[in-house]
Length: 328
Image (tube, rainbow, N blue to C red):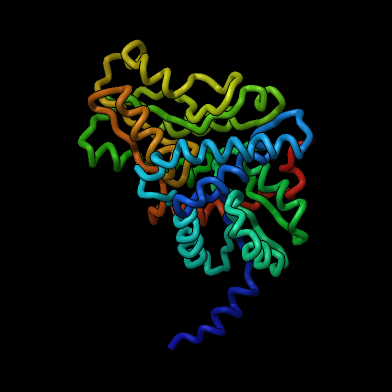
């Protein structure tokens, strides 16, 4: 019989880890509160309004938008799987590392009290973002939140856009998908679709675009016979965002696909499937391309991704929490 108390004691004396992600609505009623937290985050939506006015405007916008996208969430089952996948990933990673792995979901306010209590009880934590490419609007936003509410020492794996373990996991995901669909590499376009970001963020020093390009280049080296293209999706609001836009490139595909008949969308900046992949790519972009268009799943809970994440978690090139916070 296993002595669970001994196992627990052993784990408590080893390094502790923290997986961080955005979270996602766990049911239809949580769409509004989730969007409110997201849109009121001034690392994500940057305005010159005073805080009270910014929050009032974007709280109202979140309420209106939640009604608009309710059907989108109904299409994918009435909830986002990202919260549940992150929790399952933490359990699997804990077994892989033989260590405690906590979680934090940035825009699920209802989970914060319990998460912060567990985080505050730790001595030191190594933080692993589930965003492979760093941005001040993703990883940086969470670091800012922690700078306000967490007093324990946090050391971050800042990002891993071209880490061999991450690239190797995505290489296997794409290769297995091509094989399962009986697609020949030389007849296929690998259409990499990353989440978009306002161009102004990059002009202000955000490294996100460069890190997306690094991931794209590293992964394309594994598929030399395919044609690859990197685009950006999910533009929100006015203003210029990173180009090319996924929807525009999809519409114009006949002008650049060099006669390749198969198109596989690869969500290179997403490690878990959620509304941007299950609805946006599946429902909005695939039809723009037409026949022979496919969506490659994200890494989700694949065993090789868990092993890769364990390798990434053991990185020793770490950043302090405050180094990841955007200077206003």
